[in-house]
Amino acid sequence: MRIRVLLFATLRETVGEPEITWSADPGTTVAAFLTSFLRRYPQLVPHRDTMMVAVNQAFAEPTTELQDGDEVALLPPVSGGAR
Amino acid sequence: MIDLTRRRIDASAVVDSVRRDDAGAVVLFLGSVRADEGIAALDYEVYVPMAKKVLTGLADRAKAKFQVLDVSIVHRLGRVAVGGDSVAIACSAAHRREAFDACAWIMDEVKRIVPIWKSQPPRARRHSR
Image (cartoon, rainbow over all chains, first blue to last red):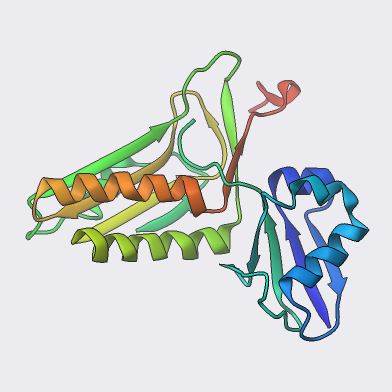
């Protein structure tokens, strides 16, 4: 199956791409996806503990199973509002 | 009103959007870009579809948690110069305490869970817009 991986802010800058198409087996969990994705992009490893993962625009748990066509977003710590 | 906009925030329009005849209090919070040393502007990057969902959820939770009558949240995206407003939150309630508390809680949550990231514009681009 194919998923769209979106990268934001420092994570986008670290990888150099805002969006990556990724292939995975059906039923792959968020945790398993992250492990293989970080193997391909090891520059993200230092961010693993601080990033949040959203699936189809909702925060996801490590055990969330991914489906074909899902939009997976890797989110660094947010910083909206005033300075 | 939940909005993410590249245009200047019209604070009075945000206030008007929550006015109701049964509201005895309207509280408006504005977050502005502060002139810290070396800062001329800030760039806001937003994961727009998710930010809209999270902001809508925050407004609904604030209504249930604080008994506020209406909530509006508007956040800028793109570049905001020093002195410009990056976020506006308006809450209406029967009494002032609920409206103050809801505004403060929403702003804390915006900084905690809404996918918006600010950064300092690169030096070379600082005066280009």
